[in-house]
Amino acid sequence: MNIKLIEFKNSKTFFINRILAMLLLILSGLFCGQSSPSQIDSLYNTTYALRKQGKYQEAIELNIKLIKDAKAQNYIKGAAYSCFEVANLYHNLGNYKESLAYLDKALDYNKDIKIPELYSKIYTELGKNYSMLSLLQNAIDNYKRAEQWALKIADNGLREKSLAYVYSCQAVSYEAIGDINASILAAEKAFSKKQDVISATRLAKNYILYKNDLIKGKKFLEVSEGLLELDSSVTPYQKIIFLHAKGLYYNKNKEYKKSAEAYLKGIELAKELKRPNEEKELYKNLYQTYKDEEKNENERLKALEKYTLINDSIDNKNKEIIEIPLQKIVKEKNEVYKQNYRVFLLVGVALLMIVLFAAYVQIQKVKKRKKISILEKEKVILRKEEVILKKEEETKELKQKVNESFEDLIQLAKDNSPQFWIRFQEVYPTFLGKMLDINPKFTTAELILSAYIYIGVSSKEIASYTYRSLKTIENTRYSLRKKLLIAPDENLSLWLRNYIAND
Image 1 (cartoon, rainbow, N blue to C red):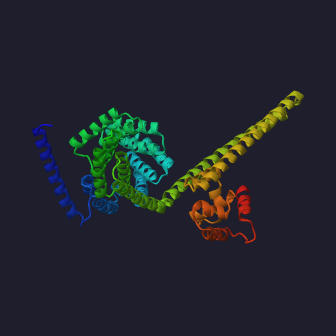
Image 2 (image 1 turned 90 degrees about the vertical axis):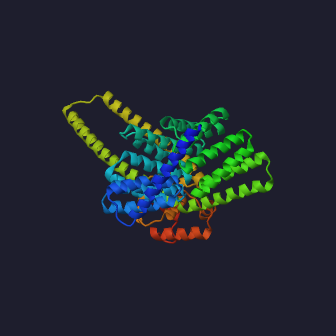
Image 3 (image 1 turned 30 degrees about the vertical axis):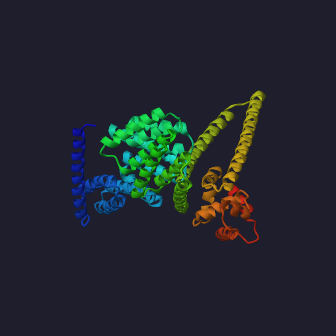
């Protein structure tokens, strides 16, 4: 890079910083009053400037005020976009509980205006949150919904940008579930839509880690580095992602000192931005580099302890909020079930009417006929026998599927998997509705316990699987009996099976 280009870049940076400073001064003055729709849009664009400076909390406070002002002005679009922005910022800070809450608000607002781009953003962000909470299949499902909405965006440039964001996030979740080919494909699709630091770095990482192709990995790293130098829109978070990949490259190339330097720079940035997930992964890789380098034991242990401490903190926080997305998933499944039930009911009524009409026509034909040959009767009997045999075969197949599903449920119960409750409802779709018919105030814990009991798991086994005390399980079981109005001497497991099976 020549001197003139450096001078141009420096003057350009100075000019941008001056503009940002002026915007922040205007912003501080406007905080005291209520903003108009045009001011809301203008201030919303300031969020990116704050994000570039790593001022996430200030950006959150700005957008919360914009939500309030937009609601007062009945400016639904402004409220919807600011809710999404707050959700994204909270996700970046690792606060998934608040992120999910604001995404729900954004969805509520967008129901009235139905902006495809915003729907794509919201479902992508939901996918990112679910991914961080290890609900990976739900994350991928939301990315697919985000892609469908992105394809509906009329503006070509905006559509390509939205799709690039979806594919880039999709690649992370596919990698997490171990589907590396799908992850690489998603990363390549993201890069083809938009050549930015994130997509280029993701490809570099894929080639380095999974294809063991350091030449291609280095090529994409150089693309990322060029964008970091020339693209004024690059954020500190993107620098962290680049440093992470750079550290991986140097580690694989056995340049351990350079690898550690890249990781340490990334860790400092992650600390400044308060991004514990990135900090955790960087410490993990730093430990591996120290180990490969045969660094002294104190340095290795220090990196490992840092990783363990942050990882435990994140796990504890995620356990506290895992019920929130699970409740949301259950609610969505119930809504789909209710919609499908209505459709099935209408189709059933229509089919019944058709059958009745056909029967009536047939009866009229029979009345007109004087004789029915024995051969025709035999054909009718044979057809009925074929139907009965077919039904018997279908019943056998259904029983086989139920047995397989039951074994799957038992294994999920033993693993204390968050997927147990979701899978249980797929196998026994009427269970939740019938339970809520008795008492709509059941807690999620009580419903999950009733599911365990329904499939024959004892209290002692439930306590072992869920890492809870037997007394806690018995207390929840007592509360469940009370809400079900079951007599003390009645077997709870048999009662549940008889009730659910009785239509």
